[in-house]
Amino acid sequence: MLPKHMIALLTGAVLALPAVAAAETRALHGQPDPADRQLVPAIAAPQVQASPFDERLAAFTPTTDPIRHTIDYEIWDFALKRIQISMGPSDRQGAPRREPMTGTRVKHGPQSRYRLEGSMVMFRFFDDEVIASFTEYRQDLERVAETLDIAALPRNEQLAYWINLHNVALLEQIAKDWPVRQPRDITLDGVPLDETKFITLRGIPVSLRDIRENIVYRHWKDPKVIYGFWRGEIGGPQLQSYAFTGANVGSLLEVAAADFVNSLRGTQKRGDRLDVALLYGEVAPFYFPDFQSDLRAHLAKYADEPVTELLAMTGELRAAISEPDIADLHGGARPPSYLAVQIPGCPSAWHNAACELLQARRLKFEAMERRGQATGRVFFSNVDLPGDPPNKNAVE
Image 1 (cartoon, rainbow, N blue to C red):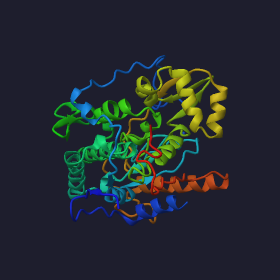
Image 2 (tube, helix red, strand yellow):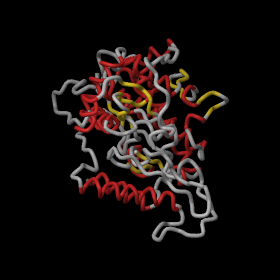
Image 3 (cartoon, rainbow, N blue to C red):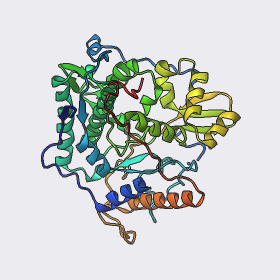
Image 4 (cartoon, one colour):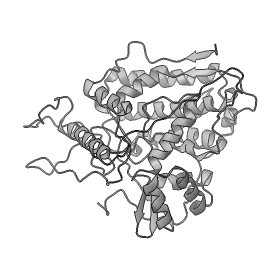
């Protein structure tokens, strides 16, 4: 049996959330105003500066002679299935504008037209014990790097480690700051969260952006790695319902890429131009140096028929789609306590806005099924066989 480095959440952490969420999540895995804030002015050629490189991060350069160790993320996998709800594949129609509560101008819950895509985290149900468990888990992952040479693992094991560490650390910090409308507003000691070096690996201070750009993007040439990194925003790649592992990282990234490319938050036609997510402009220096041709080829690889048609019908690609609102079931705000009327069958702990979102999700799935559209995507993990090379099916 291969040796494993077991990592665990804080003993006794309470991660069981309301039964409605668990039921909604199990059901899925068993089986878009033109001038709104989701669009920003065009950028003709993405001008993004890479994060400054700390030479100490060279310690995490993958070796060419890996050791066959694995890291077990079973408890993180268990947690993911209980803290977020997948909204399913995009139907490319966008969610309708939400109406304010009767007699007021107040709107509660997520307002984005992309709120029926990606996944929503249930931050409101995180108590101090749950948040502390995320901190402990992030620290456990840091300690793994003290006892195990991450750079000496098979490439897929390394990649799974970096993605999981990034996503755990981001979720922890958002949970600590919640309620917050947009994750990009969070700062630590006055420094934007993405730039703050609050992670320590072998004595080296590391930021979330360092993990993405100075470790993964620097050493992995396949652009599908960008879809593993959750950014806490509705407009970004979704937080997956599965922990990444050395066995599933390649397949799960394929699913994540297809989900994003074929969503409204990934691609939209505007006249004879194809608008794409700002994410693509951000990663262009690493993966799409010839932005128009390189990105077009990448999108074509994952495009379903509707997006394939959009690619054929459009010329210029423009990085213009953005939605910075938090990917949170309650929209980054505490529900009001003054509701006079509760939706029948909606638990009071959930609030009407969350129940309305889940109802819209169900109606979307029913409509997709009637049209013969898939309401979920399937991935297959790689299976190791005796005699397989250590880097079998590695993400390059």
